[in-house]
Image 1 (cartoon, rainbow, N blue to C red):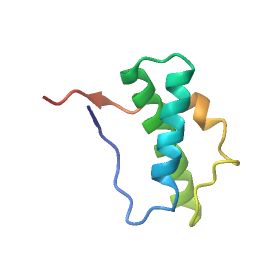
Image 2: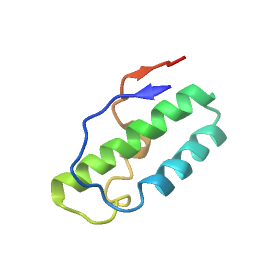
Image 3: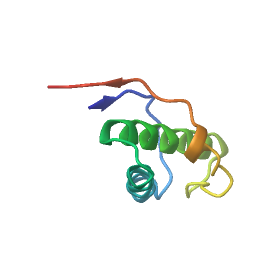
Image 4: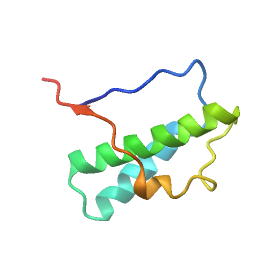
Length: 80
């Protein structure tokens, strides 16, 4: 599965760990694998975007915790 999004010239620390934790949480909440991945990637992307806009060196998870539940979903494409 491919998720398209804009590219940042720099990213804050913590994205990989945050994505892994968010994906696991979505699976434990009952989302199927594809839905969980789409929601997790979309949430972490929105938080990274916020961090990039403010120049944060770490992901602002606390300040953006609502995005973990209600972010706009990124477009998803299945790749063979």
